[in-house]
Length: 203
Image (tube, rainbow, N blue to C red; front, side, top):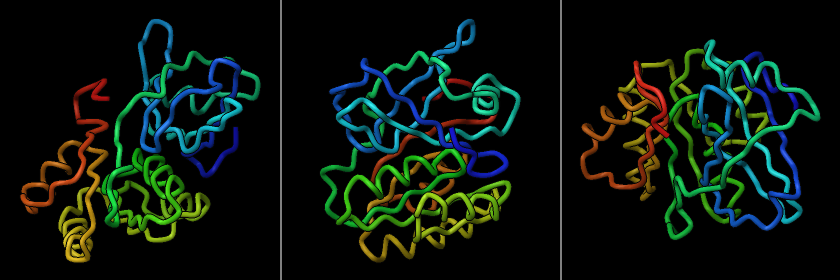
């Protein structure tokens, strides 16, 4: 466990049960919380020795955020997966990941998953400076971070990437995904909404 900022934590998990698990960058894992259910995370890498890590984001008072705040070295965790979520292994064009704080991990996973793939990242965030800091610490370079709800800025950045031939990967808040796809109806790409106001368990 390593704090990355006030609200982001790197969480490393290892165990014999994870050895040999089939993993594709962009896959998801789910952590089980007794009496609550599952919370979903994106593994960054997955070693042959059964070690993985992901980025936890503590933003509210829910069980997932509380776990991210409280997790300690040697804690045990019930982990399910990996399972398919976003697969761009067959995409040969550049990729642009669009989302928010919850999308940092998938952006890093896709960037590290193929050294020859160009990955740009466009995120909305409640605290843009903090997200930029965390992105730098995770070695993301081509990152644009705007204030939450600034769909116009995200749309402009997306348009520029589409003009370069990039394949979009829409993640994060459902409302923002809908707005961006409405403005770019022919964009195609991959889509996975991680959350929506007033709803739980989208992924």
